[in-house]
Amino acid sequence: AGSGERDADEAPTGLGEHGVDEAPARVGEYDADEMADRETHGPRSSGELMVAALKDARELVRVEPHVAQPAERLAGLISAATEAVGKGGTAEDVLWAVWQATGLARKWTDISLRGGVRGLMADRDLDAVVALFDHTARFVDRLPHAGVDVFVEDLVAQEIPGDSLAERAPDGDTVRILTAHRSKGLEWDVVVVAGVQEGAWPDLRLRGSILSTDDMVARAEGSEHENPAAVSAALASQLLAEERRLFYVAATRARKKLIVTAVGGDDTEERPSRFLTELVPGSTEDAGVDERSRWLSMPALVADLRSAVADSTRPEPLRRSAAEHLARLAASGVPGAHPNEWYALTPISDDRPLSWPDDIVRVSPSAVESFSKCGLRWLLETSVGAGGTDVARGLGTVVHALAVLAATGMPTEETLGKRLDDVWHELDFGGVWYNRKQRAVAEEMISKFVRWHEENPRELVGLEEAFTAMVSEGVQIKGRVDRVERDGEGRAVIIDIKTGKTGAKDSELERHPQLGVYQLAALLGAFQRHGLTEPGGAALVQVGDAAGKKAAKEQAQPPLGDDPDPNWAKDMVGTVAVGMSGPFFQAKVNDGCRTCAVRSSCPVSKNGDQVC
Image (cartoon, rainbow, N blue to C red):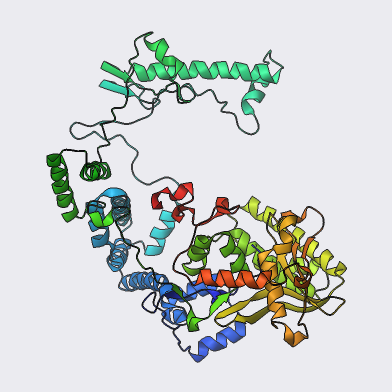
């Protein structure tokens, strides 16, 4: 958060002249009443804009089509529901109208029939829709004249599913899965007690709360143990006795046959429970996994058949038979059965280089740093829009905005606090207590910045200033800086305010990519309108946790002219521009992998093993 790079115009638009659609933004008109309302009430918040877009499709006319489509689909569903309500339909009628408008019935059914992981997800989605219709039907039966608003309030107010919790008689031969507590008083011919592992059964972890109520109760009853360790040992002994009684309940539910299972071995940390030896000493049987066995699932079957077909050491009749089965499964649409879907046999979807508008590669300072660390992450986050969104980014944006106010003459920190109150309700931190904590963090960062600003000896020239600079033919630097300052020698000093938890290492500052690109832009005349043509350095001003508790921390980069290689920043931008316009993007392991939002699509990440 707080990189200072908030210019969305730097991203490429597609792949080649026949790649991603580069349709221009649509232009629309608004009626006079709406324009007058905007002038009266001022700019709208993001929440108000979202509500307006869902109510009126004209709000989306200036948005790119691929961005507007999801909102347009949702607006269509709202319109269908509104129309059904206008016709006097019940909650069940409105729900049916919305379901029909989604067009998901056939799509999810087809995916479900194909099986696999996506088939299971489609099954769950369809089950959820059926359950919602059942609940709606019961609600309409109970309150036939209640409106949709009453139904929605009833549904939102539920903390426990409204389905009946009463026991129902099973139909035919069934298997019941339940906890040991629920099995009390019941019996079956065959009972399986699975997963009897040490640490899970018995589970001797103390069940007390943060306030250690068990300890307080024991002391209130006059426990002879005053030593906390002795009290804990006594509680653990009681837990062991309770767990043993519970295991006895589970083991005595069988009329004819009892099967108790556990796993363990020399090469694993898992150990069978001590209750196994107490049950029937010396009667346990070891069982192993047969390498020839497989899971009874469609993906496992496809994997076995593919393995047989691809193994040249297998008998020819076996390979031919496996190929016939794969062909039959592929004809039925089973994922992974057709050779076109096998790994290493699929061609690269598009090997053409990435195209840019007007054949000009627009490089931002933050993108240079991001691309230098990992080209694949830059591509997926910047060009494809796969980057994560978190509250830290919103907090950083608020702090940057207040930093601008502080630098333009806002009188006191108290006034800044009031402005913070005006926007704080727009941020959602997921909990009241965390909201209060983040509010204190924001106030601390603002206080650090104000003190740094007051002690800064350089002259402030520009705030939140956009800039462009041509590096060479077809390569342009484009971005936005937090602050442009003039030092005592009349040189440009670029300041980037950082609100993150970690800062740059001191050893990295001399060749810090983002600061180097800022200086290169100044050298190329990006701030010539202020009379600044020579860079005098750049700096990161840390106001977050990276700065410490009391004061902001300024991490400065010396001027490009003082470096043994003054052209290092220009060479770096040229190399990055070539990479950004190429057909291939390399994934690199770096210190940002742990928090990367695209780990599941990265071949060097454990979470992305499936793409290797």
